[in-house]
Length: 231
Image 1 (tube, one colour):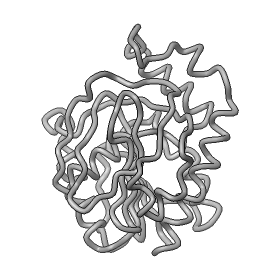
Image 2 (cartoon, helix red, strand yellow; image 1 turned 180 degrees about the vertical axis):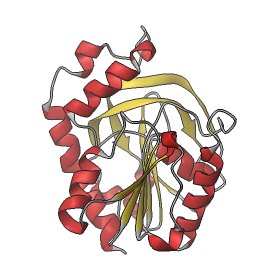
Image 3 (tube, one colour; image 1 turned 60 degrees about the vertical axis):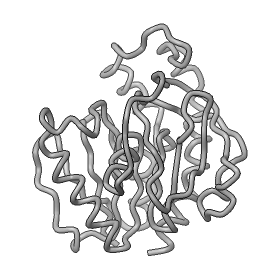
């Protein structure tokens, strides 16, 4: 299986998602969009991972590759291949499926709990999520649910934290893939966002407990198994 990664900035790689894929299918291919690398033919990939980044889905003037990426995501989804998006990646999936993406009421940056939505019980992904668990958030935007999507999780700051479309599309606003090293890179590159606000933690709070990254990977693994076993 050839899994492809869309990466938007050098400091937000696939982390634990890439590790999981590499162990099972070999190293994923990648398009480093900030370098303006070309996207592959959708027919040449068997699965897709769409990573995060500090830009917004509507910033096509500043980042012209966003338009081509949106069409690429649409094509891979239409072909029935497994697709997972993280943070910006989840927002790009929502946009590609016709849903609105817009600023959330407030930024959410830090380790805060999500709760499984009642309707998640109808989803093979939703049933794998804990009833409540603490995860890493780093976003200022959110999305409406695409038509046919199942809402999976919510937090105090954001109603739509995750959704699934059938058993081939999974969108996560939060970061289960993060490693402690990756989190440190995020802080180094996006420190200007860490201002005093109700749902924004300090660098010290963000890095206080490396075991949280280990716990996130334990939640991530069965979700990836479910997504790629359907292929």
